[in-house]
Image (cartoon, rainbow, N blue to C red; front, top):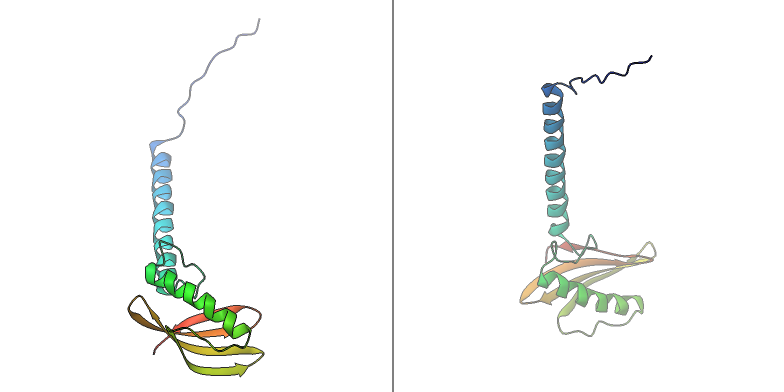
Length: 128
């Protein structure tokens, strides 16, 4: 006759559980530090990185993005910019793209931005 016996063993030592908890804590901490670093980079120029949305952009950034979208259509059509809050400081044609340096007045602030319009539209903040 066969006899079945239930054998209970210890499921791992306490040392393994402690290591897993420390590893999980380090992964979570690394994720938090990484997201903070990425968020601070995106918040430095949310329009240039293409994320004019809430945690990165404030109301002035969103207004600047709306104003910039109106300017880009004028640049693509080779039309003069006829907006009161936009002044063109410099125009350059090179490498099949148009580079414009613009001075924008947005929500009481003065911001300068260099816009490159070619197949894609790219921009970056510059000093006035």
